[in-house]
Length: 541
Image (cartoon, rainbow, N blue to C red; front, side):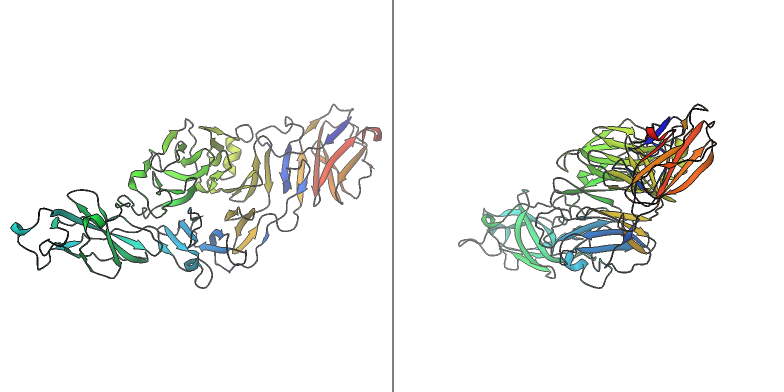
């Protein structure tokens, strides 16, 4: 009779300890199982070079500059910030955009790092406002009377837009009242130009440097007439009709709603975010512009969004949605037939082809036009509820779904089970550039797996052996290093707890031949490859 353990796997809490598959565990604690061995997971280790922040709550590292170290941005006071790089190729200002820190914000890396740490030291409100009033038009004092005006005179109106230092253009002002103008060619009568009083710039951190004037003739489209410095209050339009420029591009380039959160980058150069039950998209390659026409409304409130290979997963407090499309102007909503609300927006994680989030019943996977309860055969609703899923914040790491809950941490791999860790964190951020999961633990910022090896504990299923046939007399433990503590439990009683010092075969105490239920437990700080217990030495390899 022999029990041989190798190819170790994680926990399946829903399955009775006697009915577990041979390689699955009753307990898998602080163990890395991707190699099929029992390898101790390493504890988080400190990240050096970061400023001290009281109660940090969100992290982001801009990957470029600073001699290859990039720039860390840290927010405190419980702010759940989502930050993304500019979607523009070779952005001259190296801009970063974020939500969750009051109104949506942005800044070039020069502004963000232009002061004392912690960064961001400075930022601007995301979006460019429209002027608060329409331009006021007036005829010049030398204008001829109506009956002397030329046949080429046309009725015109004007709008004004504002331009930031980053070249971002906002939506237009209200249109001016109509006024007659004509080109001042050689034989034209006097007074064909138009004098404009330009509206003031709205207050706010927008870094506006230019006012741009557009003119529409005979109810046509508005076309570019000229630019003036932001402080300038007047403009005389004497531009001939043949010289007016491009059409107004920013008619619907609204500012994002003040409540916008959950900022996420999508392929195609545009961003997504949400507030309440409303999903929002920016204009492609114009991340400051968020047309109201691009918004999608749902019957449920949105809890989180995640970009996956097939589109955008929208988790709500009702059913999930899958949003697909290559243009922000033509995004399609697919309402998935699975009643699995998301109980924690921070639990929603992009896993590549699909996204995973915490529901009241377990982990839900959404992708490929469908949703399914991923942990249905792994953990019961009662066991899942005990983990406090509403407290989960999770990350994709090493191909696993790594989640932190109220009193601990677990990793889940579909088809293999759970591993639990003696690690806690209040927030984190996955640094894709460095393939590093950064964690907030109290006032410290650490990196997953960069500290010392933790002590692992792995307990096998209950092996039922007919009394009298399980007279186990010897055992062997193969490990990278020693010692390794081996526990043998017979009918619920620990019959052996031994620090194994080598890979040599060793004898077991007698007197347990009539026991039925056998469990094997390993406690170690080193990698364990296999465990064997047998009734005779000839059975052990």
